[in-house]
Image (spheres, rainbow, N blue to C red):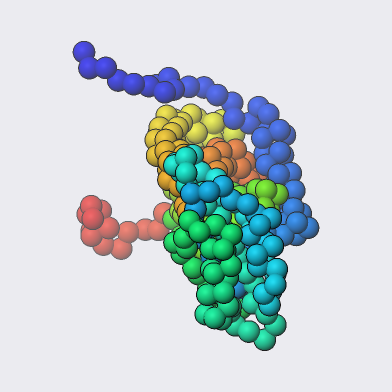
Length: 323
């Protein structure tokens, strides 16, 4: 007999509405808190959105942030932020720092002459220091990137809403987009609270989250539509519970395997992609949760027209031919 691994039993009968005041209500509260945190604390925008120059340094000696800052104090620079980068994959003698320099008023970016002076002064502090990467973005470009990022998020949400509306009904579209906004706002709120760097890679992660989350929601809604035709007298709440229970094994297996891959990337992928991986990791968890506890709850609150619509009379024999 072949061995089959089951994460959840083949048949479950979980009432996902039992504590909806805690699950759905808690989700709405977290969404509001995330929006407030975003508005009050703001995001730690990366070089893509703020403009300026970011220098990544590596050295065999430990990073001395105070010495680095003292070495650059005599130069005519804009705001300077120096942070040490920690990563478990770094070697024992690999010490990495990130130096972010804002351009002076009236300048698009830090000049090459100034960068050369910065490198020379840092080498005077630690001769072993190297500069693996230097990135510069002007304020005009960064402003355009912000609007393009917002446009991409809005366009993706609108397209998803139209797709769900056409495939199902408008109630499903409202529930789906509400679940997507729930996922996106909470992820952004986490980045605001912990001041994690927010750059273009995070926008790519948010768009990925939109696609992953709607995939889970469509699976649940597709089974719900089938069960509504099969169980015409069963209460809508019970049909929804049945649909989620029937797709629960698939949902957990899909999300679980995805999280295992993301977890490996989060631990061993390095600090360069850590923010991107972290955003998707949290987004997959939220997307799975919202598909079960947010999207269908809104559809239940709005209600569905379960009455059989009269079919139009067939005008030809071709109407009975299977396509």
